[in-house]
Amino acid sequence: MSTISIKTEADIKGMRIAGRLAAEVLDFIAPYMKVGITTGEVDRLCHEYMVNVQGTIPAPLNYCPPGYTPYPKAICTSVNDVICHGIPGDKVLKNGDVINLDITVIKDGYHGDTSRMYYIGEPSIMAKRLGLITYECMWLGISKIRPGAHLGDIGYVIQQHAEKAGYSVVREFCGHGIGTIFHEEPQILHYGRPGTLEEMKAGMIFTVEPMINAGRREIREMGDGWTIKTKDRSLSAQWEHTVLVTETGYEVLTVSAGMPPPPEFIKTSAEQIAAS
Image (cartoon, rainbow, N blue to C red; front, side, top):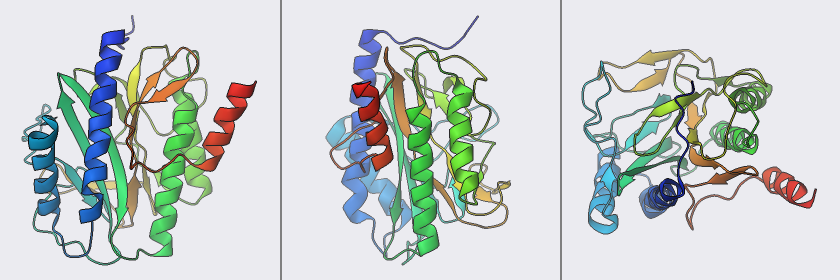
């Protein structure tokens, strides 16, 4: 018996709103992502925008899964070799830094979850390439979403693209089902074999959020109990969207005016599907 929830029309409507609002936080903060700002100031600006402008609740604040201490901030700021769950604080962003901002808002009980990479000043060619390949990995994974396909299809295409570029896929963290609950079934692995794991059905909503390392895939956990870094101190990148399985394919829910467009090859394949 599957424990994966199938969302109702009302749920989907609520998730569209929450998804758009989460993406709009990333739009709002973009002009501030410059040399000299601290991650704590980024958190403060996002927190105030969520609460005072949007009327949303920052889901990470005081979030406390079993075995963890409550997460102390409104967003996650993962800089350079931080893979995920970096806690905002005194760190000053400098020229060449790369940072992932992970935003989850709650609106009328529904969660919108998305993340984006930002380049501070002029990043290295290597950093830009890692960000681009990771972005393509996310979209390739999303492109496999349709009823009747399997969750393993998503992980397989992500792993293939990352490893072909000489990168590695983090395995300890994955995408997840989402709705009125922040993290629910299914788990969305970013590696795997096609035709394996659960079959996708219309009405499922989950995140696709590959974490790709420039070096090896091994991780290390910091003493704060949250921050995860690459063991070999190589750069890491992540992008995330929340996606609905529709009757004919997929709908990305975390869309906003300022979001980066899908890669050209995704547009082409979507047109081909529409034309076939």
